[in-house]
Image (cartoon, rainbow, N blue to C red; front, side):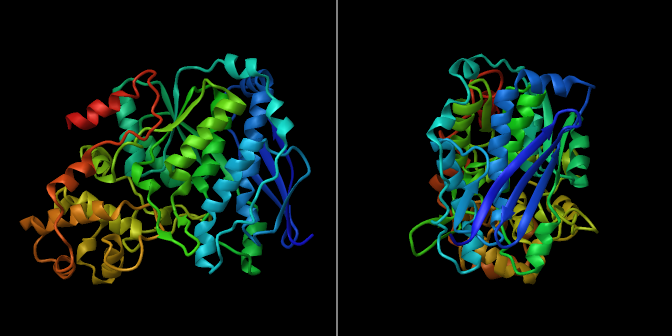
Length: 454
């Protein structure tokens, strides 16, 4: 039969909020991942689970299937086997697309072709598990579960929703103390779902397993769907911008490898459709910032000075072993740090920005290769959550023309190779896109007026 990855079973205990997911890989053995959903008020979680068990179980199934990617990647097995339920055809298509695209970076960096052998089997009868009247009638409270990652984007969304008097609760998955600290600065309640990755995964990695990027936002989105049903929210709000649709490199077979696939509009649309078809039509899943460029977002963030000492977009804060930034929130060496410094620079005074990062990243010649990639001069767009080349070029051109930023050797070296943006291109970078799923209910559509007005 060849190599096999098997979805064994899952167990959820509403008394203590513990969800265990069990898998087995034919080469690396058994794995168990655990999520701990908070228990706030005695029997409330038990009662809510009992009331919505059929729908919540279906949401857990989708989470169970998606989380498997963390352990499947160890050997990229040839076959997928299910001890329990198989996904319905549309769920199988979503899983196949998300796993292939979400593991494309790992494959590319290991000199492997597109992982077209990943194909989820399906069961057409699975679509009948939830009666149509259940999908229609499930009543959820009109409030928002808002994902927070500690960076500029989610803080822009949070502050907008606060100004609109939206009933909201912040949401995070994992154990990051940094995210908890940033969340505390917002003054909003935080719902933290703790995640325990099986220690056997590290043992497998040490033994030579494949290791690399996975579609983590897809996993967190599935956790959010379970949480929304358990804790009664009718909206799940992420803060993924339109640049998440732009891939990093096109491979020989024609597909695009996109580090941000599970933040893309394609993924967002597919997951919202599954929610409506398999959970409830009354739960909205969307990105509030989807219509906007990184530049439009950082222009808004530049007004939120209260977060300058606290926020960070550096992913070295979020390793499974804990933060690798022991001396501050920014490593000052990675593509994310380089990009965020560059696009914030036209909107924040130089001294203030240097204070945030602890140094001037545009005076570090060691970052020259990174800036060449970000500006489209060499190589490919880095495998990080960074914006489009045109956005980096626009920001760069603003600094070249600004006396406050004169005298920096990195700027002077790069300035010889950058073509100045035309006015029409600049306008396009700040105009909003019509590709989004922002619902018309409550205050959400008001974000267009706020961005345009400023």
